[in-house]
Amino acid sequence: MAKGGDKEKGSGVVRTGVLRPHRPAVDPLGGPVYPVREDTLLLLPFAEERGSGRLLDVGCGNGALSLAAARAGWSVVATDRNPRALRGLAEAARAERLPVQVVRTDLLAGVRRFDRVMVNPPYLPTVPAQRDPDPWVNLALDGGADGLGPTRRLLRSLPEHLMPEGIAFLLTSSLQPWNRREALQRGWKKHGGSCEEVARRRLGGETLWVWRLSRSSRPDGARRRGTSARPRDLPPRPRASSPASGRGRSSAPGAASARRRSPRGS
View 1 (cartoon, one colour):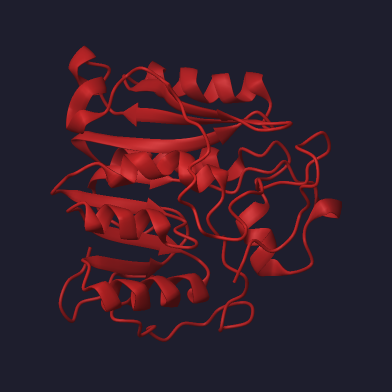
View 2: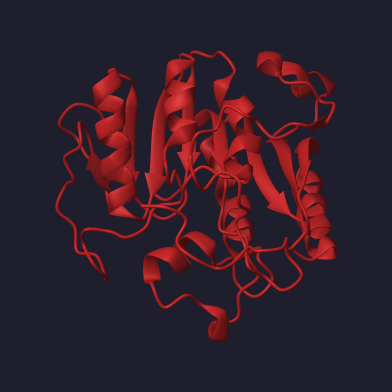
């Protein structure tokens, strides 16, 4: 990650709420930003664990994971394609004097290696006819035809962005085809990595999981930084204050009742 007056090639870097010039394909002010919901809350404990290394929040959205990690001692880099999300996070971090840098880029493009990576990707199975007409809403929801498009792309490049002892926490959903999720796990393990379920949450018509991924399958890797290898079945967190936090991400057919494909806050 570039420091001081440097900037990373191909990425706009925001510090203290100032967006570097860029040429977006759509509204340069950005649009609706993904708010805190069950998927964010399921990942949150892994951002809140104390640490002193470098943490990457991929597709930071509302910025809750980045802020929690910075408060816990991590030096945080957050990526997103929505400039409004980046601007809001940079301003919040500046107000608390937290060590957060934000980078406008796609997934992991243009960033370095990290000790911990947090990923809450777009995961709704979406065919072209289902895409939201608002490009910013669609950006946060559209996981491609099987819901695994962004996840698949991320896993291909993730080893290049993890330190040798680094770990990543990735959110997945039962809305994605189980056989294709398992194929991604097998592919990761085939190249020597480990992949374990470390948290789950059951919703009305959906189950969310958090996978813990590392480059090494060594048995001691599951317990670094206080992270247990035993899955956590987490209840709803009553301290969430977002008005959207009681709703799931999706409106896919068969998903939990009353969910709909709509902006998740702004």
